[in-house]
Image (cartoon, rainbow, N blue to C red):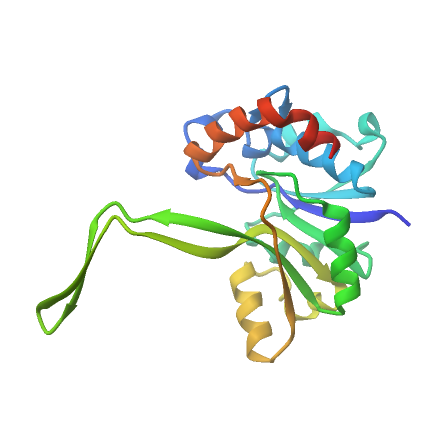
Amino acid sequence: MGKHAVILAGGQGKRLRPYTVVLPKPLMPIGDYPILEVIIRQLIQHGFSHITLAVNHQAELIKAFFGDGSKWGITINYSLENQPLGTMGPLKLIHDLPDNFLVMNGDILTDLNFGAFHTAHVNSNCLFSISSHQREEMIDYGVLDTNNGKLTGFREKPRNTYEVSMGIYMVSKKALDFIPDNTPYGFDQLMLQLLEINQSVAVNSYTGLWLDIGRPDDYMEAIEIFDQLKDKILHG
C-alpha cells in the first residue's frame, strides 16, 4: 500500500523576503526545480503515492503548478486553511489520512530516506516521531561567566551544539485527538502536551544533509549543494 505525506506549504516566507514577495516559498527555485518539486520527487522515490499539500498563502500559484500530480504519476490534493493554523492545526482539516503518515515542511533540502523513517515509526508504536539533526551555532560575542558581579570565566565566540527538529515528522492518526479543531496549534504545543501526559515520542537522529531554506543564508547554500549533489538528492 502506498504511503501518504502531508506537506505544510501555507507559510508566508517572511524570513526569505524579498525573495518571497512574488513567489511562495515552496516555489523558490533550487537548481532546475522549485524546492517543493524536489521534495515530491524524493517522496515518490521512497514509495509515497499520495501527497496532501496544506496551503494558504498564494495557494492558487501552488495549485496551478502542481495540479493533481499526474505529471509525476502521484496523487496530489489540497487542504486550504482559511486562517493560519500553525504546524499541527492543518492536520485536523484532512479527513483521508491513514493510520500513519508523514508530515513535513515544504522548504527542506535533505537526503533523508523518507521510506525508512516511515517504517521506523510504524515499528516504534509511538504516536509521534521526529527526525532530528545536530545544529551548531556560533555566538558572535565574547561570553562572560559571572558570579556576584565578578568574572569567573570567559569564552570567545563559543560554539554550541543542539539537537533540533528537522521539520519532518511521522504521525499516528491517534495523535490527532490531541489537536484542537479550527485553532492555531503548533508542533511545540503538541510536544509539550504529549510530554505532560507521558506519551512516548521517538526521536530519530540523522547525520546526513539537511537545510531549512527558510533563511537567506541557508537558501543560497542549498542552491550550491543541490547543484553538486543533484543526482544523490533526487535518486538516492
